[in-house]
Image (cartoon, rainbow, N blue to C red; front, side):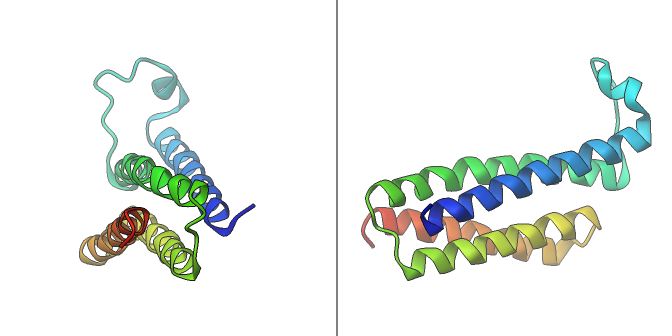
Length: 129
């Protein structure tokens, strides 16, 4: 497996783990019956709410980064810079989820910006810049 696809796989696993932790936190807060229902009027608070938001954001980030990684892989444009950008992206996203879960606002935003910047760099690479 190419390094870029490996990093994409690692990020997919991070998203799955984030989702699992979010569901566990929500179940602890409102109970399994509420989660199994239609969830109308269900209001999560605290860490469960923040993890729900972090999960949604992680899915958006996955939807943004995956096309760039796949295009780089298919066009064989993978380079050391691509691997470094993906590693930085992955570390920034791990930091983002943890910081968001624990309610650390400004550093969370910095981690998000780093991850988004890495995504932009990959798209620039796809376009030949």
